[in-house]
Image (cartoon, rainbow, N blue to C red; front, side):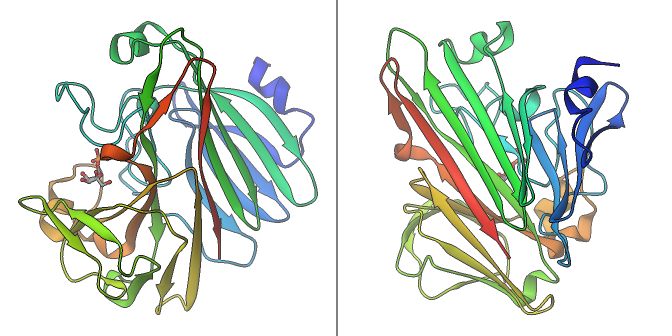
Length: 293
Ligand code: TA6
């Protein structure tokens, strides 16, 4: 039995499955929810509270291979969001989503299963982010979901950290959803030439949307088709990204069916652009989201 299987042996509702050879995931079948978390990227790819529809979209064409980010679920963008601030040759959205994490802690109660993953610094990460750090990611999975990503500066100099919980929410039809909570918030519109704008009313989707909002209020995703509202409550976040690639950009993504842009919107709990966090030696920061249906 592997160390990981032994670690899970005492937990009846938690097991280990293979999504691909040498590519394992933790599977949860608990009275409150089912969920799947790949060790690659500590990537939550499915979460379904009992009696509810699946909350997250994951592409049926997602690629389960080391070094390739999974399309859907909650990719962890870390330690930067989007393009690296000074070196565009570095991977977009950082490297945390492209590496295997270690499962460090498992706990279970009547209400929730808690999994904590760690990503220790390694040779690869040192080339991309030359600092000593500790990174922990805890998922509390039950009728509600909480995800928190903690970075601790273990070095002797300060560094900055950005990132996102780049959450793909499953929806009935992109034409019949709207996002509330960002009314009046200034944002950078990243479609075409980047421009500063201010949100008027709630967000409806009639074409590509790729926006970095300078604020992180609680948002609600209203879905007429599924007759549900998803509440997203951020903590330690100073920006919110809302994204849907629409038809042309979706067709250019090799790991998603062309029409699936109808089936998700991303609402991302983020620290981007100037909203990155500066950490002095010994300091820590936690980026988190609570999600409920
Ligand atoms: O969060 C929005 C965004 O930065 C978009 O610009 C879009 O490219 C998306 O993320 C997906 O990025 P990915 O690298 O996962 O294809």
